[in-house]
Amino acid sequence: MKKLNQIVVLLAGLYISAPAWGQKRITEATITYDIVINTSNTAPQAVDLLDGATSVIYLKGNSSRSEMVSSLGTQSTIIDGKTGKVTILKDYGEQKYMIAMTPENWKASNKRYEGVVFTYLNEFKTIQGYNCQKATGRLSDSTSFTVFFTKDLTPVNKDFQYLNKNLPGLAMQYEASLGKLKVTYTVSNINFNLVPAAKFDLPKSGYRIMSYEESIGTSSN
Image 1 (cartoon, rainbow, N blue to C red):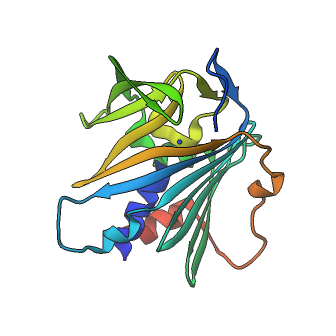
Image 2: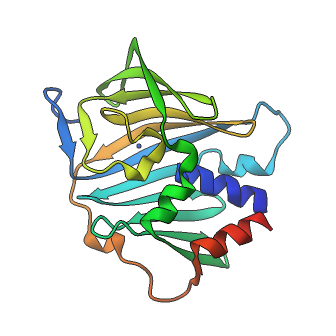
Image 3: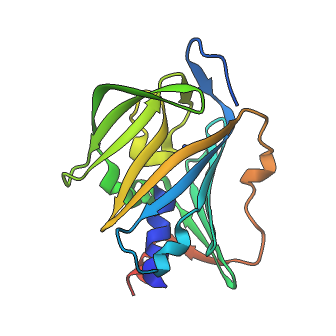
């Protein structure tokens, strides 16, 4: 179960139609990604419970809320656009944790994704009506991944998707490697309706509050 929690953290750490002309800066939207996990193993595994999960991103100005919903439960990452502080909510049945992070903590937790170098390819495909260009990203540890992004949509703040934040547009489909696992995120819907401010409110009770340092110690045990 601890290994599953670590995978969920990585998945969470780690994006209707709209006018086809010009570039749209996204200040408010709800973006849903479908998640597919390929284990290359025909035998059922606990991690297969995450297959078919969704990642829903709520954007409002510089604030964001990312929710990964699976049969295991929900993990939410809330970024306060005014302070840069990050709160992670883990809700897995009776296990409810609230982890408070400073901007420095958030950067440290995403250290692996710093300095991603993208190579842009002359290959395109359409996803949800948007023209998307293919790119390959290379991490500092030489790990590489594939992403299709559209220049038609650009979020005002892209910290909610650290892996792809340096792309000149919105990632519409991308891959991530978690050990031997290959995970694919694909946008299934984008809604530009107003996002309620209450989406970014933190719960007043019901969660065990932990610091970032405490959460690291728990994960490594």
